[in-house]
Length: 128
Image (tube, rainbow, N blue to C red; front, side, top):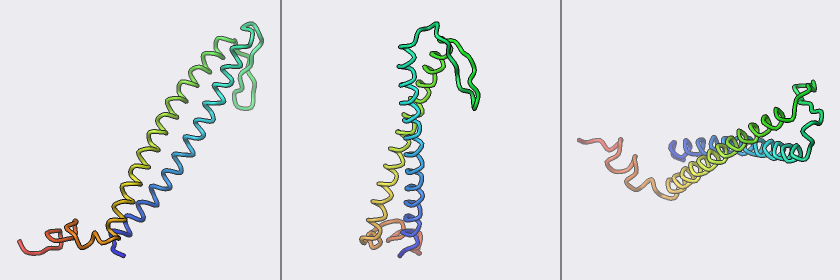
């Protein structure tokens, strides 16, 4: 197997790992987003004068309705942005993977005899 093909295989493996990591992050962000949206919806059904508490680490701290609602709204917005960014990143990684896979297939199916970088006129051509 040519060294170039081995390099592409290693790149494919790295891209596959990256794709898995990004997919996991996107799933986590989407899960947190769904959770926050559910909490925000539930909060809309709560009386504004009701006693409210916020979890900070292992401790519950009293808060008011407006602060709780605003914080949840901000969290939903930032998670929507994060999930969207991760989705776009996932698409870019998949495109890179597909391109690299195509290059590798061409290389292994006889592209080595053509005019590629190592073919006629390439770096090892000599002359000139």
